[in-house]
Image 1: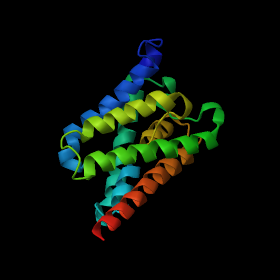
Image 2: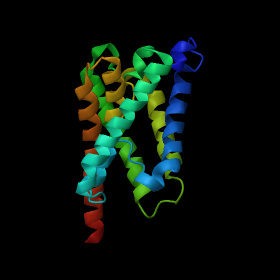
Image 3: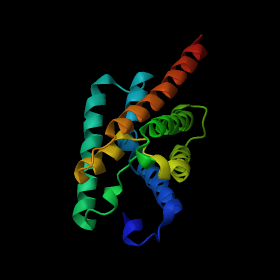
Length: 195
């Protein structure tokens, strides 16, 4: 939105950097409170591998939705309906391309999350940086094509508040599938390690 208001002063790479930096800052700032669950895909993946309790899944996803909608509402009130509130939409309405790319992007993100944040062999303290850099890199590479959401509520909130729900199923289906695929891989790895 700021890039649009400033006639492109932020640039696509600047947006990508900010996207990754915000994720890293939130992980370091709130990870000790919530486990840094800002993404339903991640919450569901952690639940799948058995490190997140069933009783918390729905409340966390609801809180993620409410938080994202509140943020988009605040942006609408403070900046106006600019740049579709940052809505994620497939380039040229190519939903199939978006499904494939968002699935792969979220798979890679989940790979980094599990490898840097969950695996005890990883260097402690670097998970936020690794995850933020991954988000920034993926946004730089694919943001212009899919919006590089990797997070259903990141897409839901500006779409709902801005009144453009087009292709929302893509941004729920693909990230959840990508994260679940990596969670399944991690579950198999953990099971094999126990044997």
